[in-house]
Length: 561
Image (tube, rainbow, N blue to C red; front, side, top):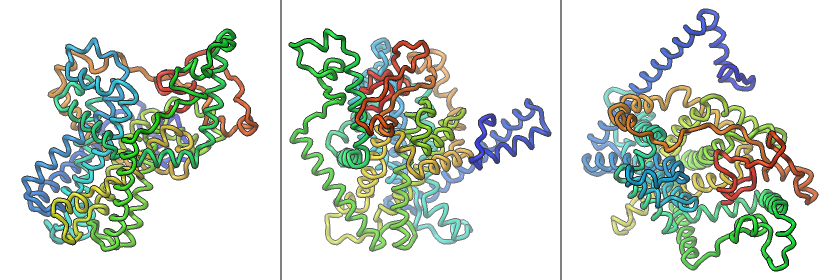
């Protein structure tokens, strides 16, 4: 890490100063031992802090201080059930994507439930549907947990704490952030990364996958697709044109003279090379059915109504967070914007992890700077962990503002009123549409442009800083403490992955996002032919570990969503 200094990075300068200072007193071996001791101390301190916050959660629920005013035993049951569902959803985000391309037939007898679950998500289209539906339950569960672990009814002199500390620790839901991050997200994600098949073989995995696919099927997330297509058409139509030029040119050059001259074959080059689902270098859009129209209409109507309820609910101060109305509006807007960047950068950083940044250094300077910051030894992992905390904290604050526990019932049916107004469902739909799915789809299609946005670098830096102070260390402590007990025999019998995990090397390619900045594109010409293979012969370029042909991209292009 210290060999990759960055003079513009204050954290890096501070680390270099500490390193130089300590290096004058210790030899390399002693320095490594000191760093191990300091890391262990930080893990212990952070773990103790998390356990203290969890104790506060249990005490607050037992004493009925939480937002959700139901019997404590019911709140405890809801909390554990919500954490279990969240742990499954977070782990399956990795597990489903990991096993999609695996040959699961050889594991059919050893892991029958994993095989059955895999059949539900064995194509990219099915995986995409699962991820969209899963996102709804993730945000809904986090909003629910925020109602259980936030304590607006706590006495101002609770256990002798000063009012300011009570506000920061108990009324804002900070203890809930700790329990969600550790037990609802990080532990399950760490386990599934090492024991993928064993996790996929657990009871309940198939149910959660079907639940997520069902949420997508009813169209609850279709507003996000509409927002994505509208935003992409408004801001990135030039990249789409660039992709069409590059794909068409690429398909044309792959045809033999005989194929190109065949008079009886009226197919376009894209159809001949890529199949009947492609035309003019791009994947054909599936025609909308009447059912798609119904899903778009009701999803848009529900989201629009949710926005109206939120604006009115905030105006009458029906929310939970103890703050004035103007501040609530400002916090809501800022947190949605923050979540927009956090969700999109998760996709963009991982997608471009093995891209050669020198190819777009001049045309996307902010994306280049971000790439150089995060792509250092262990920095991507650190970013993911720190970002996880940042995301949960942001969602909890949104949950405090978008949950209207103080909204008076104007005469509706009590159950309907609770579900529509007081449960936080309106906040879930709004957050899902504007803060989660839309940025994820945009970042998947246009990762360089997303990374080049103003504030992307700052969000990445803050995420790394959160990991540096140890917010996720308790999750690692729980994992290493329980791994031998829960998975020791499994690890000895069978590995979680069907093949050895390997790191992708740096890849070079022609990107539509880079081509659109070139003079050739401005003149309407195809990009000059480049050869990125070391030997000078055509090569199959890999895109974040997957062959380009498998995800409908030109070599090095962006995926066709």
